[in-house]
Length: 195
Image 1 (tube, rainbow, N blue to C red):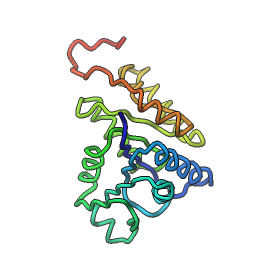
Image 2 (image 1 turned 90 degrees about the vertical axis):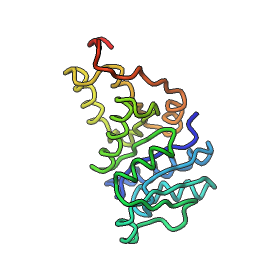
Image 3 (image 1 turned 90 degrees about the horizontal axis):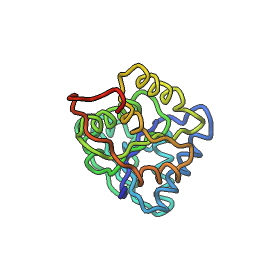
Image 4 (image 1 turned 45 degrees about the vertical axis):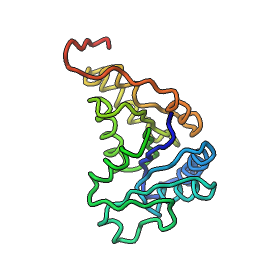
């Protein structure tokens, strides 16, 4: 059961109002389903809009903020809980420990780096938690195409291509996370191209 979701997303608003609007809808959905949000702790951009929407609906929000970013005064001050860590690496590890699953909303290189680290950890068996992409405005279409290209070129087994759950609608994506069945662990021994 997924009771706590770590969300990676941009500290920017994006080029279209629909990014913020959909971040707010996603936050509302989390709160209504009584799913705790774990996120990077920021008060700005999509991160801030997401946290605010969960809190406005009476939901629980845990922020995980590296101390060097906290000193720049971008930290959300009204969270249910704020955890200050020493580094970006520690932030990801703490978010992973707290969460039952992971979702990336649109964001930049930092969002992708966080998502891919969780994806890689799942691939090598460090966790078996579900991962999803909320594909607002088809933002992640190029990334989905890249996953397909990786699989076609045999750098990604089919069973791992399917680990990245994708939907354009928040409730549907959360349902996919709740129904997720992890693939068998990678061993590099006797792995066939058909798996």
